[in-house]
Length: 80
Image (tube, rainbow, N blue to C red; front, side, top):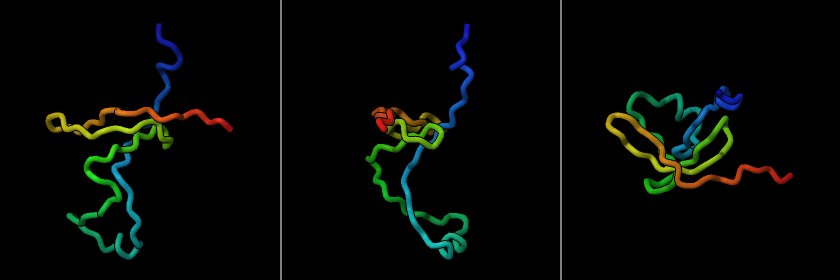
């Protein structure tokens, strides 16, 4: 028998990096434009669940798909 937790939907996102650019630069970008990010190839990627950080992971290529392997769970308890 399935529990209520089995029916909860969670949106998972992976942050590959961040960049701050001006609106002018953004509007001038076209197909093929490159946005430089603040992360390096070997950095662990941040995994978000409903926009909250929950883990760090590594990008994996599996055939024609991209996957993320969890390498570290983050402390998500709020002690306040």
